[in-house]
Length: 144
Image (tube, rainbow, N blue to C red; front, side):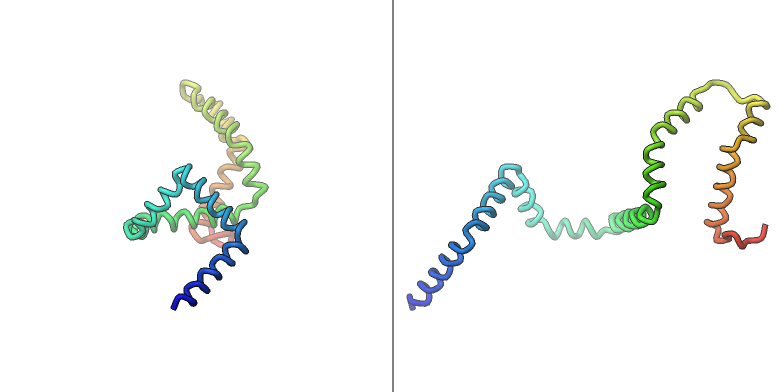
């Protein structure tokens, strides 16, 4: 009965010898995880897997996860160049908007007319109108 056990031990020693570098790397990895505290965190997660799973499948979390996935999908559909240009210009534009909003007092008729007839306002109104038509399902073919 001792022979099969000795054979198993010899096979195990052969495997250890063949995979020495991999085993050494795995031991170093476990030691690094232990020093960083990650090993303890992983053990805690494993021990509380049922609690974590139950918390993860709650309706609120699943709804948030679904919304996040939809947002990632929508961002993926945007033109990368336009998105990059928007990201680069956004801080400057927000700063200018804050300065403009910080000006005290109301707008006079002349300033209001100048703003309303500016190309920027016309572009904003056209973009808003086109997006509202699209959101309402009308698109270009909808009667006015």
